[in-house]
Amino acid sequence: MTEINPGDFKILVTGGAGYIGSHTVVELQKQGFPVVIVDNLSNSRDFVVDRIAEITGVAPEFHRFDLADRDKTAGFFASHPDLKAVIHFAAFKAVGESMGEPLKYYLNNLDALLNVLQGMRAAGVENLVFSSSCTVYGQPDDLPVRETSPVKDAWSPYANTKQMSEQIIRFTSSSFGLRAIALRYFNPVGAHETARIGELPLGIPNNLTPFITQTAAGLHECLKVFGDDYPTPDGTAIRDYIHVTDLARAHIAAVRRMFDGRSASDFEVFNVGTGNGYSVKEVIQSFERVSGKKLPVDIVSRRPGDIVQVWADTSLANRELCWEAEKTLDEMMLSAWEWQQSLSNQ
Ligand code: UD1
Image 1 (cartoon, helix red, strand yellow):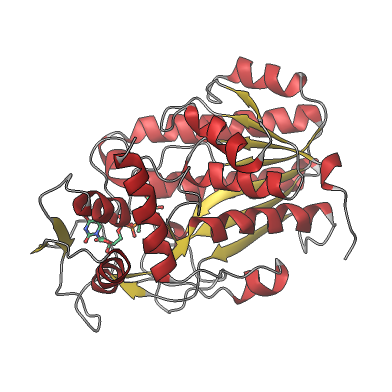
Image 2 (cartoon, protein in one colour):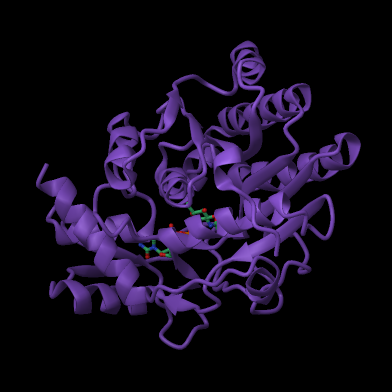
């Protein structure tokens, strides 16, 4: 494998103050890559950038603006001719909200992507990592789901923006010498081991882990389990939960693949999960084990739009990206709990 000098490869991380973005910036800086963050802080806070500096000892360059603003994005790329890659996270991600406000999702997620691609073309930036989701598979017919499994009709505008974005990147990459890798995330959970960065859900969280940790912290009366009548061993739905730090490392593996010239084609797709499926009940048990707290739980009806079960075949990512998830479910839950406690103590 060619050894590149990371210091020569400046990387733009859009949405770098967000949940997955901030953990990715930490891992990039730990490996010596110079990072520029663009984030409008619509779902994050400016102290995250200071915390990244605190963890890594390096303050990333930070610009606050909305990538859906075409002129500002064009201006940014014109003033940054030395970028070697973009990792594009900046997007809205709440499935439920996207059902109520589809245009907000299409406008934001697609405009930002198109403006970034235009900027990359104008500035001659040739490498892109795109933040995609296992949601593109819907409920797969066969498990574990592989990258070659069919992309099903989207169940939400959010999922649809991920599918459309992958298509836009696929066609764009063949037109102007762009290399791109879409990473299809399974369920990212947990927080940095320092408990200085983590997920910052605005309002009442929709996702399982922040709801669990907030319930344990006394912010909610009980955790609602959405359905225990699924055709699974314990009746609750199954997902492939992955520690956010493992997920962050996959992005560094992806940019290195492109920088090393190891891409097998202009547009590649990889599943990023652990390959293990855990039920909602198993996640709760893991949390209770590591936190020593008993969660008040209420079984309610299924949540509309939820699939029964999904977990990843990660063999392609393991082999081609030379990457593997390392952290266990217990480690995911413990770090999420430590993060919640640090938030409560602020
Ligand atoms: C969804 C999206 C995923 C997206 C993610 C982040 C789909 C299929 N998946 O994941 O693409 O990246 O949100 O926004 O659209 N649960 C409870 N009680 C709760 C919360 C959740 O029982 O209070 C259950 C859910 O029913 C589900 C599991 O926990 O079975 C995980 O839910 P969640 O964390 O919301 O993630 P997904 O819906 O899998």
